[in-house]
Structures are given as structure tokens and as C-alpha cells.
Amino acid sequence: MRKLPILVLAALLAPSAVLANGYVVANADGSVARSSGSIKIDHLGAGQYQVNNQTPVNGCAFIVTAGSSDTTIPAVTMATATGAREDRAAVRVATYDSDGNPADAGFHLIMQCTASVAPVWAVVDANGGLVRGLNATSANHTGAGTYTFTSANGQFSDSCAYTASIGLSGTSGVSVPGIVNVAALGGGTIAVRTYDITGAAADRGFHVFSACNL
Amino acid sequence: MLRTTGAALAALLLQAAPAATAAPPPGQSHTTYDIVVNNAGNKVRGSAGTSAFNAQLGTVIAQFPIQVTTCGYVASLARGIRHGGVDERPGFITVVRSSGFADGVFVQTFGPNGKPRNRPFHLVVAC
Image 1: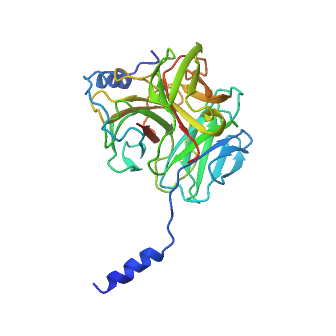
Image 2: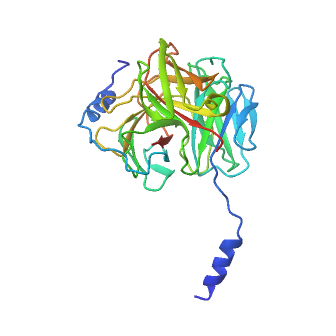
Image 3: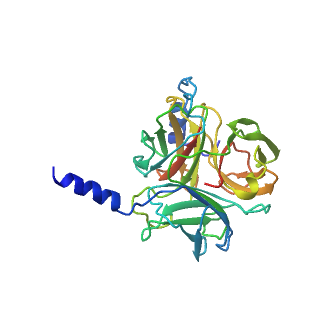
């Protein structure tokens, strides 16, 4: 029992590893286009990046989507993420072409560490219909695998990161796999491109999620 | 339909169950949840009240402490181990709400050839 006050005091004085949400939009050369806080990226090799944060993120979830920071429509790219083994504050991002070969590409990475307010999210079906969402204004299908999505926040596309996943809007059935990439068009609108597993443009439903000023 | 395998067919049948109808609870409309799942379909870490189980090859149902029928889901192939590691391999991942669980998200993962494979992933749900 006498140890209890000491333990409490030690807990109060111990340095705490605060988990904080974060995001970064990176260019293909590893430069940071925009981010929350101070984030640096090391370009380790073809399609290999290490995102270095100021605080530990090893307890977080990493959502990454290949895409450009501006209006450039990116090449067909897959992206994956993992925590860095040697550094609790770092995330390794790998990008691949449609054949699965490492290839440099821009990406949007969201590090979800604690529950947060998602400023914009939406579910869009393969026909471009906006099914549901938050601060979502409209969605359009303008060609095979070609969509635009507009949020209610006019700054959305210029200051945020956005990730997307292939997915259905309802409950029935399952989606065929594919690739989804994003690009910023400005004025609150982003471009979303979907492809089949060979990299050919193909209609797919998707879910999109943003992180801004976390 | 892409390479409909037995596993994919089973997944379709699994998703054919009647849906539970329910709205998200009041006051939860702006909340996010996350879960990290390893390639065995087990939860590694995540928001309180989340869980996951492997339904079949390449298929995991992740469950959350609220009903997620009206939410959005984003997921990435990503390592699901506690201490990080090497880059995760390429592949594909899809999401859809679970037909059998109002609090569940049906996640399918595929290898580079489009065939179902058990792969680790990170999933965020925004409601």
C-alpha cells in the first residue's frame, strides 16, 4: 500500500507518448506537399518512403491511397503501409505499379491514432451516385472509372489529405477488386480514378475520407 | 465477374443474408473508429470495442461498438504487427457493410493476381 503514492507520482512525472492524428500528402520524389505538423519523408528507393513524425504512431491505423497533391491525374498505382520497425514515430509507405512492381508515386497518408471528427467522408456508387456522407455535396461519373467528388468545404481539396477504398454502398454482394487513386482539382473537388486489377479503367464504387487540420 | 473462385462465391453467399436495419445511435454521427487486423484476421489494435474475425479465405468481418450501416469505410493493405516491419506487398482490398452484422464491415483482401488472400489491413470507419 505504501508504494501506491510513489507509483502515482512516477506515473505523473513519466514522459507520455501522446498519440496524435496526422496526415501527409507526398509527391513522388518524397517531398511533402502538405501535412499536419512537422512531417519529413525519406525517399529510400523506388516506391519506398519513410514518413517521419514528431510523435509515436506505432499504435495508430494507417490509411494510404496513391494520388497526386495537385490536379495531375496519377499513373495507376497501389500503395501499402506499415509501421517502421526501428522507429515508433515512422511509417513505411510502399507504392507499386499495376503489375506490382515498386514504382515512385505520390500518396495521401492518414494516421488515425485517436477518435476524431472526420470533416468530409462519402460513399459513392459505381454510377457516380452520392449515397451517403458528411459534408459531401455531389459526385459525378464522367467516364469509365472516372469520377469527381465535391465537398461542402471549399478548402477541402487544397489543404487536406484524402484516402479512398474500393467498396460498395449497400449490403448486398461484394465488390470485385480494383485500384483507386485520387487527385486534387481545387474548389472543393477531387478526382477519383478506379481501375481493374490489370490497371484498365473500370467503374467501381468507393468510399472516400479526408483529414484536414488535425 | 472477375475470376469467381469458390471463396469468392462463398463470400457472396455470406453477404446474401438479410440485413439488420438500424440507424447509428444519436450523438455518434461525427465519430471515427479504427482497427488494425493481421493476416490471420485477428485484431492487433484499435478503438475500444472493436473486434475482427476471419470469415473465410481473404474475408474478415470487423466489428465496431456502434452500428455502422450508414458510415463510410476506408481500408489499406498494411502490416498488422505491433513492431512494424518491412514494406507490405501489393494487392487489393475492398470494403462493404456486412449484411449479417449491423456493426460490421465486410473486408476482402486479394493478392496481385486478384485471388482472395489473407492479408493484413488497417480500417477506419467514419460515421
